[in-house]
Length: 318
Image (tube, rainbow, N blue to C red; front, side, top):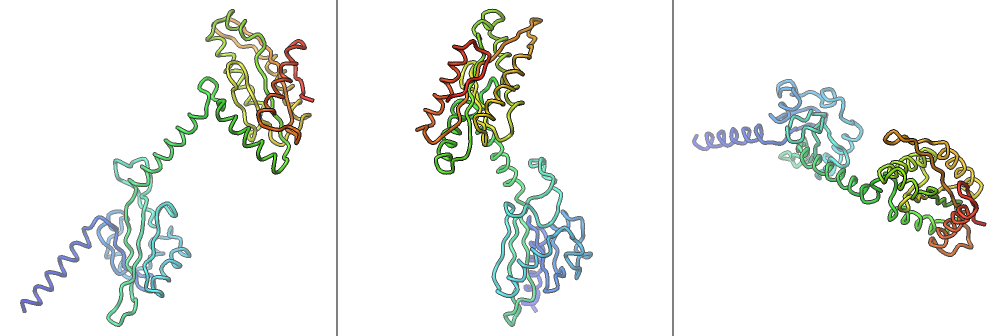
């Protein structure tokens, strides 16, 4: 008699623990019918245990990917081994709202799950147990860290004044494109240009006005470029553009379009109108160019010839 009472107490103690533990517990039979549904699942689903008893889990929760879930479950039933799913692979199994105040930025609960077999007295798997872990804190913290790292990476390669790629980053891109060309010979051209008589702009209108001219010049460059082109600030009033899949003729057309657009641009700063022009040099990468440095120098020499020949023009490197 005492032994029966002790077993009953132990049973109630175990059931109380299963109900109040801070993870979801679901037991399914081979027909995917729910046999156990603890308080965690009740609280987050809004469905009480009595309403889940012997109900098909896919009828209650149609958002579950049935094909994927069945594949997971069948391996547990047939092979008598555990199965797992983590939030990086699948953010959630049950579409529960996230009510945790610390991780309120997440609309839904991120979940890890473990599925393990429940053996009968004959050693057969009659039921499986699914444990649902709320990992929203981990997921959102990792996501926030990833976002912060991406922002830091972008800041490290971005010119603060213009939001163009800074010199360090675009030169890395130029080196990469040179190495890629050495292997695949894909057509690409480099444009380099600067603002004519920029010192006079600073002396006449002030350095803040000069900064505004640089910003507008960068903005116009981006407007003229395609998404796959790489635009950067070389330094001071000098800019570059790597034009992928563009030969010397295409680079010339791009440069002239940019030059004419900037020539027509009037910048109003502190009530004063500022007009300016730019000079450009272009070079298509070819097999006789020995290095990325030589490629840049060829474009720079072409720019210098534009300056020598009266400015406000584009010169090709021949």
